[in-house]
Image (tube, rainbow, N blue to C red):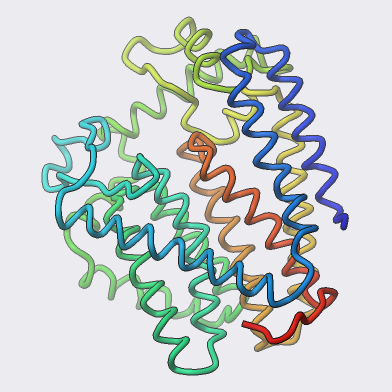
Length: 356
């Protein structure tokens, strides 16, 4: 099976292989480059492996279940104090009340937040599409656990990405609900803990060490890309650490650019960024076309809106972090593209004996 955005997956993979070959440290980039290519091309395998609607429905349920299991584990981490904590994750001068940020199985709270941005919209679509109370309660528990875990990450970029995803979802499904946005914002102000409100309101505050740190890294990366914009420096932290220190500020050492789009240029040059954007645009166009064709009120329409909103929120979060730093998140993004493409052509799949 072949969709229009598949060609950009092949092009993106080819560019990453070229970026790996011409890396400033080929040995250091080999593992990261090969994993990127393999995980993204797995989307093509998954697209052709799913042949019935039942298989697609079951995979969607499993994705929500996996997100719920990860979230429950993250909540347990917070309750019992499990896991590693880094002093670099919180500015203790500004946020002394935040002593623990959950990571669950993703080893970093920001990576966990990015994972949940993709999972929560699918849970929300399942909740709205449920036809009986058993399924509604099941999806309500899943969404509740994932949202609580998202709060416990204290990841402002992920919160902002989730808000972006929610807005896109509402615009697609029921735009009139946007009129209630001010009321919802006021209600959240009185419901959410003060630490959450203070952290969210600090977005963009250069007095926060995390914000100023990212700004310094972006400026250093832009200075580096003036010399390496065409082919990049190669994938992986070893390549970045080999070149970036010559351009970066002395107070801002980094493993990556802390920006998805800047890092793509670092890894494989400006063409990689162009192809990635074309991939996302064609993917969104295919899903939007199917969304417009689908009858209002249908469950498929809700899931299509979830895939669009999840992708939008994920890319919004990518403005403040390198979303593919954790290869499990990269793998999930490739899976997300495949499942979104499958949902866009769900009517063409075989019924497969009962639908979830």
